[in-house]
Length: 225
Image 1 (cartoon, rainbow, N blue to C red):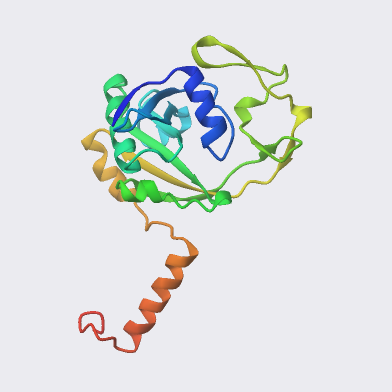
Image 2 (cartoon, rainbow, N blue to C red):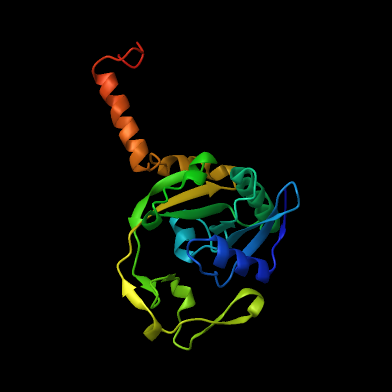
């Protein structure tokens, strides 16, 4: 497996064809992913984090970045390895970044399984702001909506986007927030903010069954205590 800096064409194709949102972030850094057979598998994209996010963690603007897309076609062998390798490359190319942030979308029943598998810290769920959708019901990122209908995109390229009158505003749903320290000095902070990982309904039901067997004194003497 190898990763290399992605072209805008690769990022756009992967986002539109492999990612559920079907949207292309306006400004991002991306890496194309190739498997052991040299087949292109898609992209992993990062973006600069919000200033407010940096202040929240006692950091400066430019020290927090966001993992915004893993737009893959399934030809990769191990997705967790793709993520860890992309983080190493991003860190190398952006040495000032100390913390990564990412979100899992409850609307798509995403709990952040890939983040849980790679030891990210879950810091909680929150209600999102207003959500914008086009006439076909597709969610549109606020950064892709302007008064003029145009937005400055990758490498200064001017992209066409939607106007406010072209979208419908609705209430958002929960998003699950994860953070990942790139600087070891932030480990205590992450630990202090850590909360139990959110689970899918099936996992919750399995826990309830396990709890039931514990309460009646299951066969495992440790669990029965």
